[in-house]
Length: 297
Image (cartoon, rainbow, N blue to C red; front, side):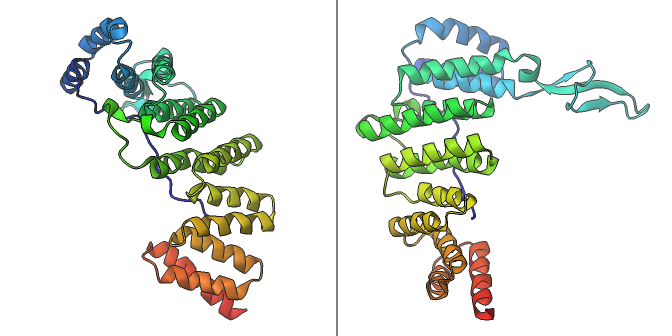
């Protein structure tokens, strides 16, 4: 079962509509870290009711934590080291700012957590929080955040906003489930009992909120395939195809499932439908291989 190509949403840092955002962008462009530290510290109280503060400040600290830092200290296990080209001896190490100061990533996490708590309708902050949680190994917390995103998206769609309190860049019924896919796919690929449980929980919630979008059905089919539940695989892929009859990847997965179930006539029809669509060469090549395999049987 091939996982869908997924969209990964990272907290946007493009707000410019207020004085805080304007000054933030000015300091970031100048790469004046010391001035930025003071500015963000001074803004902590004055901008407590400004959603852009949490989005931009957390993004800044997360990016700063990921920047490389050269050190004369010996490399820790697993860290890259610096070697003197003349002597071949180790003279230092390369680490990130966050490796040297774990508090930087926690600062980003705390800011994003508070931002989403105060402004749950700001989906850039919600998805940003889930991104940070995943990268910090907090998968269960990230899924809980995404479940909250789905709930607010379903219950109050008119309230949803993106960076700078602008409307979502795409309709919620398209953007939200496709963004969620950026998290269900890695959970599926992790292939552990816990990750598969979280993946299913997130897929089920996505379908409950956006039943007409095909992505979550496709992932549920992949989960069923792991368990050898061919009936559930066929059910989920048939539903996905019903929701998106012109999706080439869903069609390929459906054709593969039909061929595995010895439904050769149906599989051949699905492969041919795929070839009639505009699709990546990789998908079309897979469909051609499937047709050749059927003809060889």
